[in-house]
Image 1 (cartoon, rainbow, N blue to C red):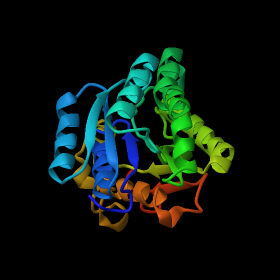
Image 2 (image 1 turned 90 degrees about the vertical axis):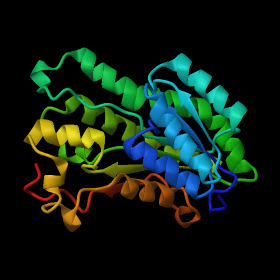
Image 3 (image 1 turned 180 degrees about the horizontal axis):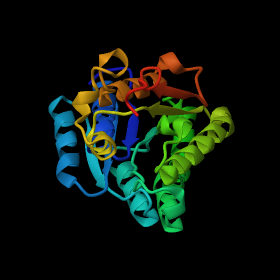
Length: 263
């Protein structure tokens, strides 16, 4: 592992499966040591760690629900002890809405999604910021925060208000953070995928259309549904030297928008 991120330490929340897994593997391939956060599936997280180590990288897995303040604090302490202070955060952990209309969605569901997609990540950022500022001021020369959002904040699909509201709130926070932390050398950006071929994407397509996600390939932009590796590539760009003058931006990874027949 001698890539462009050599010497850097990344935290990837929700890093055990799907998009998070692809991001963790890509950052490790580019040379970063990776803290793989997960909520429940220890086996999946350890599988990611094992793959990174087998390829010569450094990685550890850390269990913490992102909306559990105490667990997140313990996780960040463990990361600092095992790997060092993080200078990259990829905020990817999340959960979906239940698919009910606003009229029938309990307020507790709105609050729950806000905790997972906004309040929890904000708390994690607050905890990591001192170390990130030190990294940016020292040998590393920069630090990076990348939020994984969704193109649904623009399309606002029916039945997904708690999810889209929470993602939109966090996007606003990231844009604000980009301005506040620019003087400290910290870049803050957003990656917003469309439908991605993951377990969550498969469940979404099955529930909404009663079909397999592979059946959408032909009608999708460029003849395929977005892959986790596509999202990982966007993240890799934003934390690379090629994006040294990029902050406060929202990079859509959706093939230019969904084909009309998909939704």
